[in-house]
Image 1 (cartoon, rainbow, N blue to C red):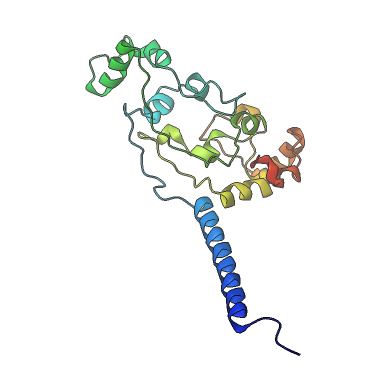
Image 2: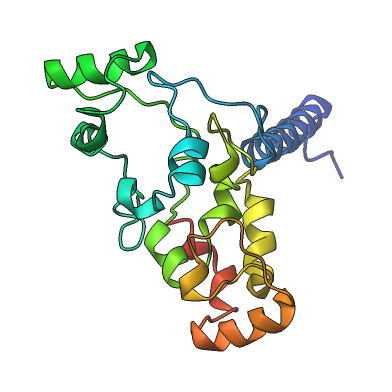
Length: 215
């Protein structure tokens, strides 16, 4: 019986198979790179006005919700408009050089171009309001901002990191009155967390559904 395929054809098939395997390996590498721990953790992000959470939250006791008004209901926590800042700084520290960009923007009626500290990929859906309503505290993702003179990214926010929480949410849940208290910690987090799973009616199986974050 004569040979069905010629040797050159067989070589082409092998090369095509190697190309497919190479593309698959490259795709996996790109995906892992996109979801891996980012560089720059712990490094303060430069801003047009060097806003200090330590001063405003830690020293003056301003609640997170005063500036981030959407954090309890909306997907995006919100960036405060200049009118929120000027509610105080129209009268306080108006002669400070560090505040000149704020005052000049207010006079021009132009927004400040704040730089994002935490940025998720476009293919990831995250809702602040849902997490707050289900007992996840601000500090779990943002760290203790009340101790940050300059705000830095302190959590990787990678897929692995998020899944660690979704697999064992009881390790992170807080009572409603402690959501915005960065310094709070439970004496027995596991025991409290198990009770809060029932209190917040959290479906643990649903937390591992891909469509929850990738829509």
